[in-house]
Length: 275
Image (cartoon, rainbow, N blue to C red; front, side, top):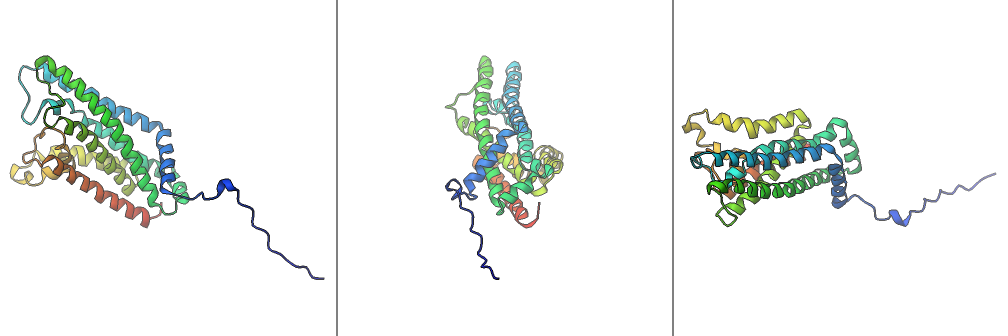
């Protein structure tokens, strides 16, 4: 007795599931859901806002209480935006945690299993982090400028939006912090360890620049202006003690170049080394 074997019929595909595939837009939407669902995201962004506005107001108030004018390299604009360089610490932590948080919990394996090409995950994280930081910090820099100038107006030291460099500095503060976030995220993707990435970010942006002031001017004068924080900081009004500052947009381009190199290295490691 023989029987004819027939292959099982493939299950019908529901019309609702046709065309569902991994696309960059869907990966971005997924990363946005992760980003806004984490309490650490809200806390670090809120801390950056407090630093940006609160410390800007504090330094403006101190300046307004002094009888003398501004110190060399300072202006009414730069004083009100001093909080930028403290907010970058919170922004750096945020950028690192966006990716190392998944490495520490092992969730990155699930993300890469769903998106086998890997790089779309990195591009999505960079996009969401940059957009969130820029939007938040632009609003904060506008508020910091307004509060700072209101405090300086009592001594007639204030500036206005029509003053040279005012608008560039306000937008520049948001751009500077956005690139700082990209740099931190790239470090996190490259090192895959929260402590190591944050320590490296702090060393580059907070420790090395002040230490260079201890070096002889003949040594430091040739490279200090090219450090990421010093180069990018030129976009904000003021020279902050840099002997040979770069032009604002040239300095910002140098800072962006550092970020691009780190992102390239992070992308190479993501493609080459398993999570």
